[in-house]
Length: 554
Image (cartoon, rainbow, N blue to C red):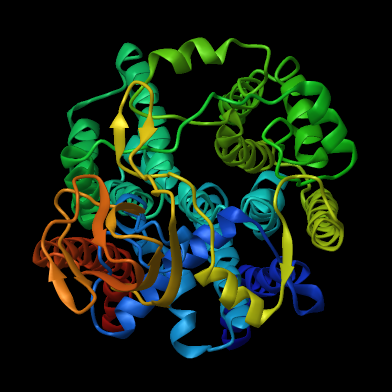
């Protein structure tokens, strides 16, 4: 009996051991040689995480504007780009002072949690460990995920990718009348709201589309509707801090939100990227990898030979989401009609393709009841090897995909404080022409003396007395304190900082603090999140405790 229980517990540890080991394997290739390949997006995220880290280190919430790096424009990145779930990259900095090791630890946590979330999803479908491992590998090592992390370094979107399996798990549980489903969905969507709003909009749009279909199929009943209402309420409360910040700034200021034409994937460029096992930062060739595409093609072919199984639905969803990213379709016509948000590139939908393909494969092997160990091992091994090789090759080679630089720990820190950002989230003078209000007057020299999470100190040199405009944003609804040559300045300009400077050198400091309301909204977000987690844990462990009590009574 003891040996049987021991073997059972040992089997349960296999997925977690696999996840822990593979998390290391997924991280190390991007840091070989003690260097990391950094781009502009990477600098952007590291700068905003540094700002939040320094604020939390002083037991404060960060101000809505960023005063560390990002071209010293004082842009409202903290307010407009959620950071709360990004704590997985921020918390290691409290314990690890080496910037490279702290970043590597953040990626390890990201990889571990990504695989744990998809394990959570696959475990709901099957108890076969080999099928679970196969699903984990397909989701973790598909090329788009590796592109998110190591070539685009889109850390907000990568964290949202991590959370998508939890969102889908919540939907599955709701459809199957599980009373816990709304908790999974609400917590998952709330966490995405706290990391990447565009992913939140895309996920919400997809759920809305699916539920519309279920209405026509007469599958949506009162219980399901109420579950979605509760999940929506929990997600809003969980993301309350982030959502209120975005609303507060957007409703009071005309902002230059990231935009641009919807870049589609070109099949001929995609084919070349697949053959080269490439994860370069090229929106025309974003892909999920050669082997996952091959699996998708095989499963699409199987649709014509097998007429049963839920795997068919997931295969169709994966195929449609994959094909829809192609340049075959006139997506720009749709983009021209949607002005409130810009997807920027259709490759973002590959996150859903990867999720649906994972579900298709897991459901197929579970439902067909065929021998899975050998096939699962082969696919898992090949997917892992090709993924690791793609990261290693990209890390070691000079690629023609925009600004890229290899940095060591010290350079990583310095690049955080000297990071570049154009006009994202800058105040606009004109919405139609999208004219940025950030203007620098001629004849002024700006030198950064000191940067901190809540204060930017500059040395301004001019050749004559006069009024000068600085390329530093000024937002309505944000509290500022400005000091020029030792005197407090009350008038700063409407959309960018404007000062009356004296000939020669002028010392100027600009500081900002998080409003008191941010502490209230943060408390609401934390209470809602922790409350949801506690409810989930209570419902998860209560049946086991009751069973144990019942066994003891017998």
